[in-house]
Image 1: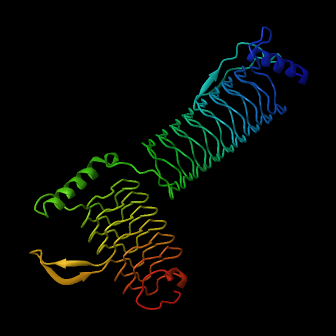
Image 2: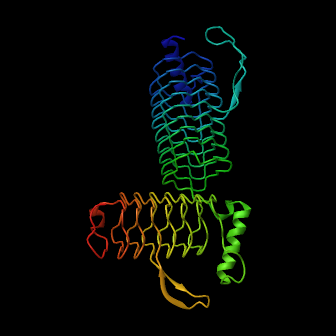
Image 3: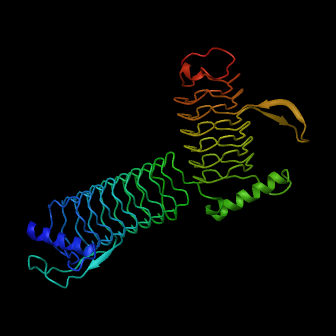
Length: 418
């Protein structure tokens, strides 16, 4: 196809879009447009199924509602292009530049194109099939608008989706290996069965997202918002928690103390729940919402609490030895000693300090936290916010911190760099 032929088609298509008496809808199905420069052209609602658009420059073009079924777009430039509600089922879209593109409602599911006519070179090939979904591997899609997009089964390996809008998108069964979704908005998105090996989801919004069948162990979810409700936990875990609530309510006469060693409680919402006395040794509670929770005399040693919200929590006498609280929020938390009682419930006059020995508190928020008498021996407080924290009589032997971190903290003596 010559440039003049393409120009004529575009002119006729513009007339068709304007509903002029003349003009006709652009039919570029199976056309070979590889490497052409079609920047800022208007191909809204055009027929381009099976077209070869490898390395084609379509930056700023209007391709909304366009039929790109099983088209080949490998290496194309689609920056700032409008692809709203475009049909991209079965398309090959590897190494495509989508920065700033509008892909709201675009359909990237699988598809098979059965050729019924010759292409522009007189060739009739066999069917093009990609039933697994569009291949978008290693494409650049930062800040792209993909709200409500149909991406089920698509190959998104290595795709840059930083800060992309994927609200309500269907990503079920997608391959997201090594994809970067830092800061992406995935609210109410369907990620069921998605492969998330080495996927970066730092600070992503996953509230309301369907993560059924997803293995998050190999993903980086630091700072991600993906709190799930208690009902999403396995039945056995829910039963343990329910019996613990009874145990608390009945002062130990009924129910059983929760023992959930090494349990997966990641991203769970247990705000304001009373888990005092629970044994959560070695559990994964990363990213959870434990704000205002009661964990008096609980065992959380060796737990993974990365990015967990413990603001306003009551952690008196808690055991957090060697726990990982990197990026956790402990602002206004009470981590002071607990008053011990005898078997009759009478105060003994003895106090049991919180144990944070060897605890990793890198970049943790401890603003205005009550850490009186806490054992912080060997704790790593690098980058932690200690402004307003009460460290009176706290043990900071071999703890890692800088003197300036204590400038606005309450201490009972001068403490040097450790």
